[in-house]
Image 1 (spheres, one colour):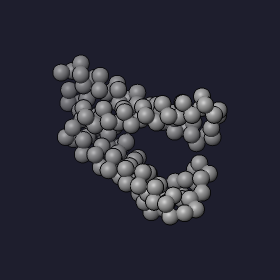
Image 2: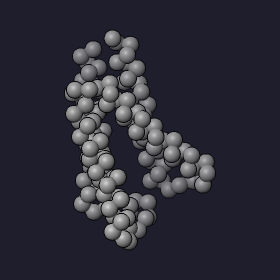
Image 3: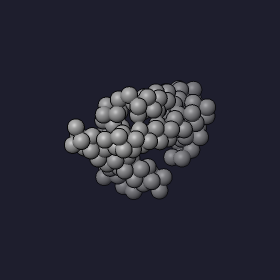
Image 4: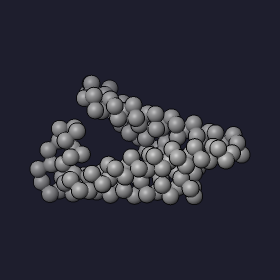
Length: 130
């Protein structure tokens, strides 16, 4: 059980740091985040929205993941699976509706799919070891 707890903590901290990276980039310069998908943020409201979602939401999500890695593993894994799964569903639906996106989107679809599967697997491992 101790080894599993260490694996879960490391996984959640790494995911938290990845989200923290996006959050910091979006807060400092929201255009850099949108450049990956060729979206021009040409007004204050657009930059505000990117800072709020990609910056603020990801910042608090990252902080929760890092905290939860040590204090609330089960709940944090559930949230991570839901968050990653939501991205996967949204991206797959968009691909079905509109066709093939850029390689950047395919890369993120892969990352988010792996994130979701690992989160669910670790949740399952926690459940069977109780």
